[in-house]
Image (cartoon, rainbow, N blue to C red; front, top):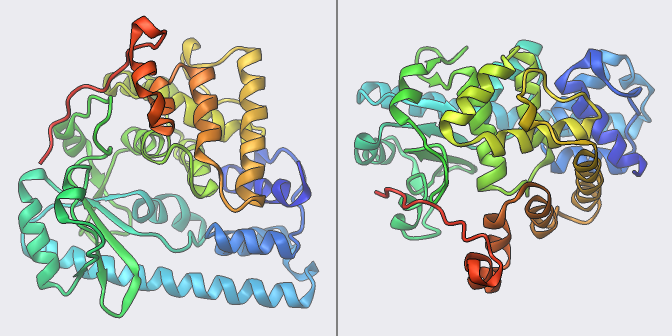
Length: 365
């Protein structure tokens, strides 16, 4: 593993647990600073180096670049928070409950208690399905502009309405979801239970709720394993492990909730990949069948480290690479069919050697 890749992993290990870092923190070079910027981690890097007393040891040019980048991220964070506040007040005036998802929730629960900056993120909200139309009207009335990239029904058939943005802040995107996984999917999502278990968002000013800790971890895992196929910012993968450890989530309760939701595979893969990347022990409390044997664990480590190298040094993690590994190691023909559409007839036909796995029919709007 090259120095820059190792450096990035050290910063992320600090996010998960500063006391369990697998090796001493390396000072970043110019390439590491660029990777931090591309992955929205400049604010995190700034705080980590400050905490370790290593910031003043950087060359003056790198210190100034890091300060400037961190200040830009803070400014974008403030703009995003202002937009979320504006939207939350509009929803509250219209009697529309909303649950903060992903970055909006993690910023308040995982980053703010440590006085860390997460970096720019979209505003993702979950609203009741029957109030979607009213929610869109409220967003239009509040001045949020439709993105207009695809027809509105394209989004509704997946898991959220057409994204909005601010007229003077096109970098701020608002996604209002009606469920937590993109259709079609193999999960049994109990939306009534999710709403019933939701808790007030810390620092949300009574405008938003958030998912309870178990649902929060599972949503992060589903997002990465099913929606994104691990193709994207590496920070998002680590946040599931970081949230698990920081909040002291009960592994046995998480396994039980994952089985109820049909997300046991997604959860175990996501938590294992994050732990392997950082060199941490597996999350405690997972059931025996969720912990791969030595051979599978070593294969996972080799595949993940190679895929990470591509992500950090080749301009993006090739989705087919990790997806193919998922198919081999964890029996996921659905991923292989998604990546190689021409092979779908073979992979879906038991007579031709395929496993014949298909998603259940999904309810759509």
